[in-house]
Figure 1 (cartoon, helix red, strand yellow):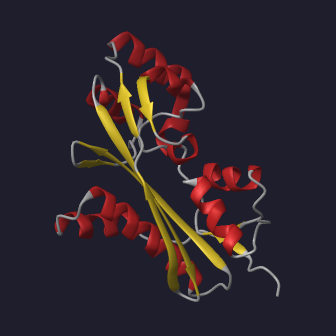
Figure 2: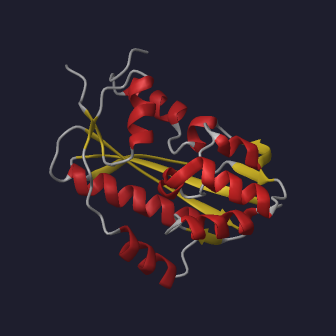
Length: 199
């Protein structure tokens, strides 16, 4: 029996690259989910940040799985600062405001992944790395934004850990792949159980 195909329900270049580098052949398909509307609904209900991330990941996976066969991976990551969900910065000024808000504090990256098959979720995983940002000076923030550029606007925390973002932190508790947006090790483990990867 042949292994099921793998589809990534995402337009995220970072997630696609993580899978490819780990030897997982996955076709990327945008789920076309209205994330802002979904978040507004979740927040109106008072849903916890981790549950919001899980619901969005499931929404993406199921939407693509309803029209495509195989294992469909949906993922979402939300930054949780003292129970408050923080969204991607709208512009560079907003990115600076994010960094001021994080300065000297610890936040969590609620990182959810759901695999759907035939329109139904078949596997879920949630990880929540904790990152402690050092106290940041205004001079550092200005320099960091200038050097990093608008790529920061694609990230929920206005940082890329694999780049200059490493300079923001004094402590990180959690898995590197998860911080980049995909709990890769448990995902690979599940794909082995489905014969997508060799065990």
